[in-house]
Length: 246
Image (cartoon, rainbow, N blue to C red):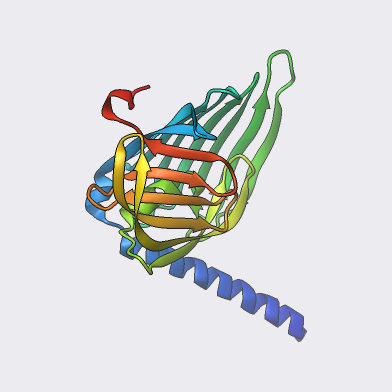
């Protein structure tokens, strides 16, 4: 049976998308600063409308198993707390396993996913006191070159983007089990103010995901020192050393 023109176009589009995803993964792999990938992270204070309201503690390290990515973040006023861990393939930073526990009010969400061969499998569940657990399976094809959402805050410093550079990729959002296409663009070197003092930083704009972020990477240390959430009165800012643990 002859294929219709639409079938041919759909097949061609699928091949093009797969090729684009592979090319993005290759671009990321080629840009990785392997020394920065060994160990790194940051501890930022969360500010809402200029008032301190929590923290973001984020880091990674590499061992024989791969790249271990972790995040402990809290919004005090809304009782939101996130504990996130992922194991990444050191070759291209695609995920191998993802674990997320997100508390909001009296409820908490659990996500547990494994990326093996060409499949993603696991569960998403919602828990509350005195309530039946609501669970949904994660069971779909693995998208080539996909990055887990939280890894973007590691990519900004380890890809060594210079003003004018950009890279695109798909990220996977664990809480919603969806993919979004994201672009990181290094726009300029700017001077910024934080509670820890001024920094000369490369501004890296993350666009395409929800929400967008402006990520500032210190030119001297390569550390993330500020994150502005686009369209929201929310900032994550470097703190003086004596306040960094608070």
